[in-house]
Length: 319
Image 1 (tube, helix red, strand yellow):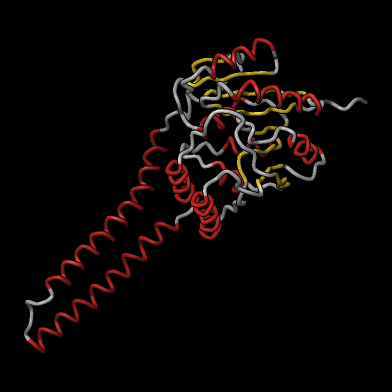
Image 2 (image 1 turned 90 degrees about the horizontal axis):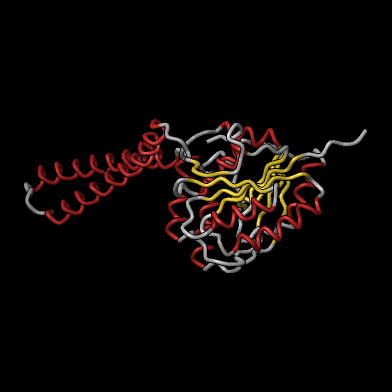
């Protein structure tokens, strides 16, 4: 009996990838054809300002394997990944970037790991950070150290979105429909056995990255808030500690007044204490505000994305 071919869905989030997309398509289709698997290439246009959508349309015209989804505006990479997941039909579902920093040839190794039946996920992690600045590398490593200490979701340093998953793992991730998404944490949180494949860092084939340093810092903060209550614990501890210090200082002032009758001196100290307490209060309010803001966004229940154009059958389209 002939073994049934499994369908591989490869999701490609794109933002201003006009130059890189044709080069990426050439390389990735070459690898997918080598795999001899049936496949679909889901290109998600995340509100690009250049001709990315036109390139997608041209590719879809000449290749039936190409499906494009175009957002009405920029919703972010997380939304693009989720849109791809919701509309992927494959037995295996994966993510890859269009800038060729994710070597397409690794798809063969990931596919082999999944087909062995031993793993539900095959993920790639880069072993070096060639091309990144020293300060960016330092902050990145500290982030992984911190998140793994304070969260129950184990995240591997160097691991990105480049991976293939079984259908059941993909469905588990789709079921986590939260608006504030942090995929690195979600991949870990759902569990399932993962095969790690290492590779050396590769430069972008064209264009420039849309991730700024401060954008990455904000993304890291989102990850910590989404997968840990530790910042709230810190705020509670600071509140208890500063209250304890305040009682000690109050006792000191009362005793000093009773012994020496001196209640005027110490103006500079008092100002410092007021500023310190005010700073602690604002810090704690900011931490609490982060969590309240995310609750607020979740309760709105807005769609993760809005699709304005696609060549996918409307009867099958999600979003």
